[in-house]
Image (cartoon, rainbow, N blue to C red; front, side, top):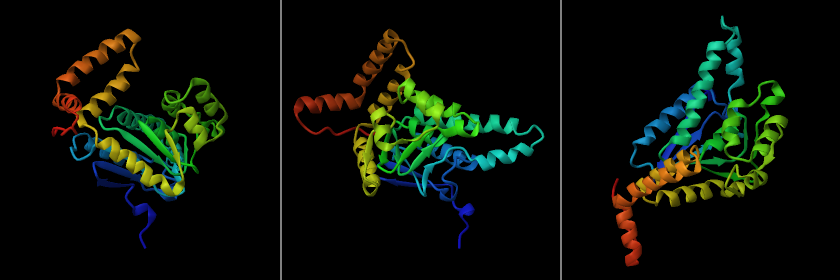
Length: 268
């Protein structure tokens, strides 16, 4: 029998323009160990220039989507000469880079959440562009309960939901249901558990059918304009639209719309 510790931390699969990356540490509730984060970082980096990948789905196996950082791994470094100081700086920097990679990735990233997502697992969901969840899923930032406030998850959470909502989740550590998470804007859709994979893949394939360069420019523009003042945002996106209008995708798409025909998107 294969030991769970010898299993690959991720299970990538490609079909119909969609790269599905499944977290595969079910015995550890898909805790974000160094190894798992390194593997996910590498897979996401490789997908940047993979023309066959239009959309990315993050899924998971086991009883949890992700329980956050691997606390056993982190606690083991208390025995280091510096009591873990250098390791903790390294691992939180590694996680921060991973989350920013998702936000800044040129391909849309969709979280497929089948179960509980807590702490950095909730951060992972909040960092994705879209999220589809099972009605059984729950979301929480419970670090306050163990004396380790969810400060890094706070960055993604506070950009996904209203401030007072984020603060309540962070200060109380209480979980919110999938339906409540949808109402708050943390996720997009709630579906029956049996329908989760099919619904998420259908959404991913639908987005993957859109013109590639337009998706890339659109996602990048969306993220960047959020950081700008109103006038600077309009200056920036106006130039993005100018460049988009000059591209072959817009030439074909606008022409097809005016001619009342189905567009034939150019290869990028």
